[in-house]
Image (cartoon, rainbow, N blue to C red; front, side, top):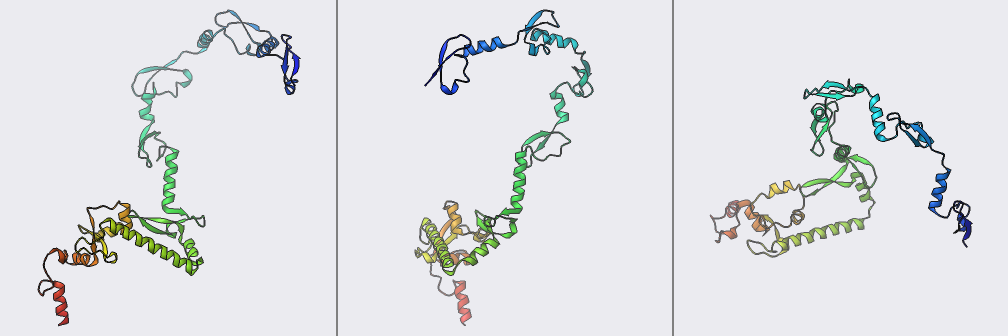
Length: 319
């Protein structure tokens, strides 16, 4: 239950909670402020050092205060300061004023005059932006953020953290895989991958190989169906006989560019472009590669002697 107490300032009764009974002495904030003001030490009188007017202030600040107001204090400080020194700017040759204690080190009248001489512009090697620095500093980056990024990039190019053994090893200790025409290091080093393969049993190895073959076969069927699902020359529809053909040639050069990546996976990543690739059977594709065109496009029977170089070579060999 609340306890009834009497205010020590106004004498009025007020209720307070039991746990606050020992610490509560006043009924309100106003009574507390009044009691605190009455308990303060009396004000001290002092004479202003500039205008000579008598003013009152607290004893705790009486030693520091020498003026009655801010205005008088500023004028009092101005009296004691020595006269400014007049110097000539080292850039614009104009005269300017400076304090006596800074006269020896002062060379310019403003920051705009000092900046072209004291600062130089350089290009950050990380973000390629212009930044200003002192000529004496041998800096290469505009900030610590760019510095950290550059060193992280340098370390990442030469070393990599293995996800299995948690050790930082050179890039040469990792195998690589192709993606989007580039090769990237694997997340695990060669030693960890070898140990993992050795620890597998025969059934697990065969299962992983079977899943990889099925995934690759499904991707091949999807790609062939996207491009029509039949040979563009002879109309063959058997999936096992069909392949991807470069319409304008250059298949060997393209395979070197993607560095051995699966052509079906690469086409899927590129969104299956339609103007440069088509479906041909292996016969039409080989004939186009060896002779420049498929016999089906001539519209005539070339199986007779004298019209097919391959036929002539077979006849001559048999003879």
